[in-house]
Length: 88
Image (cartoon, rainbow, N blue to C red; front, side, top):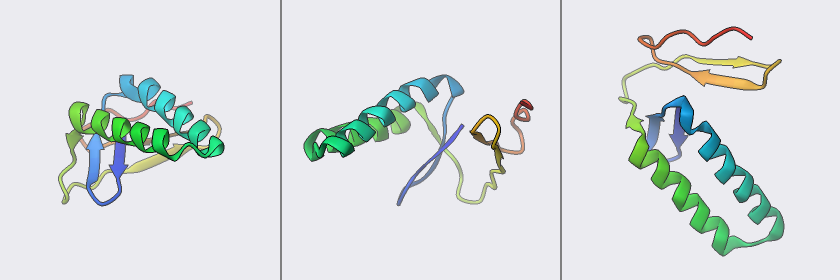
Protein backbone atom coordinates (compact mmCIF):
# COMPACT_ATOMS: atom_id res chain seq x y z
CA UNK A 1 0.00 0.00 0.00
CA UNK A 2 1.05 3.61 -0.49
CA UNK A 3 0.73 6.13 2.34
CA UNK A 4 1.15 9.86 1.88
CA UNK A 5 2.43 12.12 4.66
CA UNK A 6 1.55 15.70 3.81
CA UNK A 7 4.67 17.79 3.30
CA UNK A 8 6.95 14.72 3.18
CA UNK A 9 5.86 12.51 0.32
CA UNK A 10 4.71 8.96 -0.21
CA UNK A 11 5.86 5.71 1.38
CA UNK A 12 5.35 2.12 0.30
CA UNK A 13 4.23 -0.14 3.15
CA UNK A 14 3.56 -3.86 3.37
CA UNK A 15 -0.17 -4.60 3.37
CA UNK A 16 0.31 -6.44 6.67
CA UNK A 17 0.60 -3.05 8.40
CA UNK A 18 -2.91 -1.96 7.43
CA UNK A 19 -4.37 -3.35 10.68
CA UNK A 20 -1.86 -1.35 12.74
CA UNK A 21 -2.62 1.83 10.81
CA UNK A 22 -6.37 1.27 11.05
CA UNK A 23 -6.12 0.75 14.81
CA UNK A 24 -4.26 4.05 15.19
CA UNK A 25 -6.76 5.72 12.86
CA UNK A 26 -9.71 4.56 14.99
CA UNK A 27 -7.97 5.87 18.12
CA UNK A 28 -7.31 9.19 16.38
CA UNK A 29 -10.99 9.44 15.47
CA UNK A 30 -12.00 8.76 19.09
CA UNK A 31 -9.57 11.41 20.38
CA UNK A 32 -10.88 13.90 17.84
CA UNK A 33 -14.45 13.28 18.93
CA UNK A 34 -13.46 13.49 22.61
CA UNK A 35 -11.44 16.67 22.08
CA UNK A 36 -8.27 15.06 23.46
CA UNK A 37 -5.74 17.10 21.50
CA UNK A 38 -2.73 15.95 23.52
CA UNK A 39 -3.35 12.22 22.97
CA UNK A 40 -4.34 12.90 19.34
CA UNK A 41 -0.94 14.54 18.72
CA UNK A 42 0.85 11.63 20.41
CA UNK A 43 -0.97 9.08 18.25
CA UNK A 44 -0.35 11.08 15.10
CA UNK A 45 3.39 11.01 15.85
CA UNK A 46 3.15 7.25 16.43
CA UNK A 47 1.46 6.80 13.07
CA UNK A 48 4.11 8.87 11.28
CA UNK A 49 6.87 6.96 13.09
CA UNK A 50 5.38 3.65 11.94
CA UNK A 51 5.38 4.85 8.35
CA UNK A 52 8.95 6.21 8.59
CA UNK A 53 10.33 3.09 10.31
CA UNK A 54 8.57 0.40 8.27
CA UNK A 55 7.98 2.17 4.96
CA UNK A 56 10.12 2.82 1.93
CA UNK A 57 10.02 6.29 0.37
CA UNK A 58 8.54 6.43 -3.12
CA UNK A 59 10.76 8.39 -5.50
CA UNK A 60 9.39 11.80 -6.46
CA UNK A 61 9.51 10.89 -10.15
CA UNK A 62 7.75 7.51 -9.73
CA UNK A 63 4.13 7.44 -10.85
CA UNK A 64 2.01 5.20 -8.66
CA UNK A 65 -1.37 4.31 -10.15
CA UNK A 66 -4.28 4.62 -7.76
CA UNK A 67 -7.17 2.19 -7.88
CA UNK A 68 -10.37 2.19 -5.83
CA UNK A 69 -13.01 -0.49 -5.64
CA UNK A 70 -16.15 1.24 -4.33
CA UNK A 71 -17.85 -2.09 -3.61
CA UNK A 72 -15.17 -3.16 -1.12
CA UNK A 73 -14.24 0.42 -0.12
CA UNK A 74 -10.59 -0.53 -0.73
CA UNK A 75 -8.06 1.61 -2.52
CA UNK A 76 -4.64 0.50 -3.67
CA UNK A 77 -1.62 2.44 -4.81
CA UNK A 78 0.70 0.18 -6.70
CA UNK A 79 3.82 0.88 -8.68
CA UNK A 80 4.27 -0.44 -12.19
CA UNK A 81 6.42 -3.29 -10.87
CA UNK A 82 3.92 -4.48 -8.23
CA UNK A 83 1.49 -7.27 -8.81
CA UNK A 84 -1.93 -5.98 -9.81
CA UNK A 85 -4.54 -5.62 -7.09
CA UNK A 86 -6.91 -8.55 -6.89
CA UNK A 87 -10.37 -7.99 -8.25
CA UNK A 88 -13.22 -8.07 -5.76
